[in-house]
Length: 250
Image (cartoon, rainbow, N blue to C red; front, side):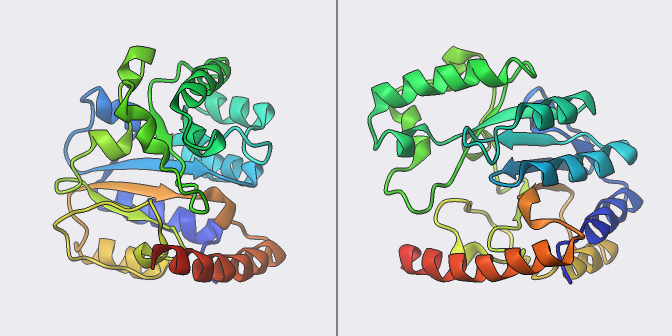
């Protein structure tokens, strides 16, 4: 079965064996990413404890990653956030303020500032990443149509500050690596014509030197577990979500 912690570790090791260096998104924004690199990003939407499991695997391999937390209780769990930060990983804000306040930019901005201060209790947050909020008609990135996140000490937002024609984007949205058709907002425009479906496909592509030199990998740790019941639950629920998201996209 795909999306187990065992397979996740195999993916990281495959990248290391091909001499890819891992960087946080913060590192990338500060110009520290060089050579063959992977920007490793995690959007912690639900089941925050799963993110601690991936964080421990990464730390054991000498890898630092970026973890973006939402304000909802399933994600915003201080003990988990503190533990991940203590392992040396970056903490960021997975903001969804426009969808929370029905497009009211003033209320959304006030809430953004409040929550940013909250997450800065655990880590000196310098980067943010929008939550897709697929069932909302409001795009959270629209908060920056009338505001500038750099005014709040933020140096990067992936959907604004990465040239995805130079950095190949991979995400497990839809519980597959080719789930773009199910994505409402977690997708980018790029020149690459490279596709993988399963994590084993991705590992084979790495071993065959198919992967570009510069990559951003985004995962949702809720999907990754060695507990069979949780694997099956996530598989079943994701299939339902994919149908709903496909209808929204159409």
